Image 1: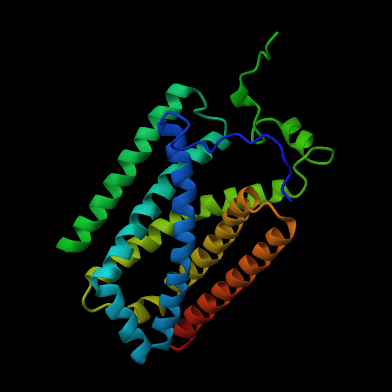
Image 2 (image 1 turned 120 degrees about the vertical axis):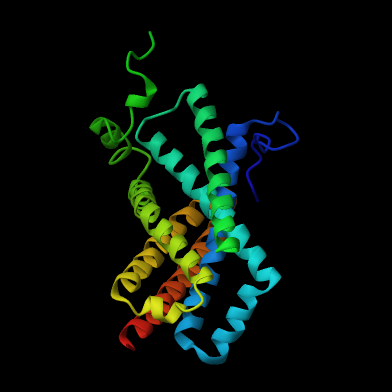
Length: 128
Length: 138
């Protein structure tokens, strides 16, 4: 039986007004979970490369398929966002940027940087 | 009378008494070790992750260089092993805090953490073995 005590409503999206800071916060967690799922694929890929032969061919064909490329794209978005916002978190851990103005500024900077890194990456992959 | 120091000065990095307050008689218990593990692996993953992403790009765009060739060089083999270990340790700390927030039954929490540890150990072992096989095979 869960204890019958008052609970605060979940922060999104029905009860509270949208805020950039809380949206980025939950996005950090969601991309972290997505990257954890991606780590299974990374391990699988390493094993396939080491095994070689048919297993590698199948894996390689999957990565090159539309679904594989979509997964790779989503992985890159999650990776760059988690990286940029993680650096923002490390700044907070060191005591910088706690005030509201800085939190919003760094939030917009994180969005811009992760979008830029993702676009540059895929332009490079698709053109090179 | 508000505290004359700003909030941002009261972090464990700047003020030793913050650390003492949460350790020992504080409420953090082992949490501080996990907090540090998450941060130190995060720092390590900045260069390792960027190196890995750049290498993936090179592999994706290069017609000749194969993944097996890339992993047979000592530098890339070492860095990929470090990436996998730091990444999985970071994942373990992160998912454990997600479980702590959303799994409310003690038994389920213990079970979820056991499964998480088992999966992480298997992923780490399989990845390191795979890289070692490619590295030692050449």
